[in-house]
Length: 116
Image 1: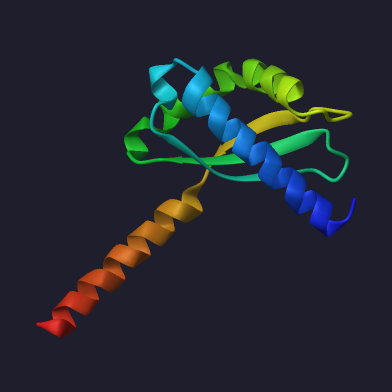
Image 2 (image 1 turned 30 degrees about the horizontal axis):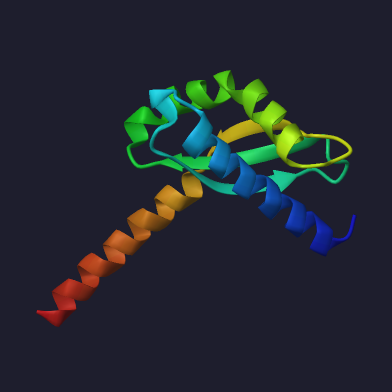
């Protein structure tokens, strides 16, 4: 699969997972989840779905909620997308986005100190 098709598939699955989590799931544990990135394997059998949540304390509960809904989400993906094979989903907490927010806060704090 070409790089272009791989990226397009990643984005397509990401957008569909976002819609399913936001509108179809009623589990309160996944209410504040943000889907950050999707990486589908080259054979299309597996997909890593990276997510973040505003409160790091809710990370474990959100992960449990997403893993509990994994089969439902995959079924909805199969229904929404006309793919030869719908990948198995693996939900992974995205630490990079949280680290980026921390760095942005530190930069902003330093910037305010120099502005005063």
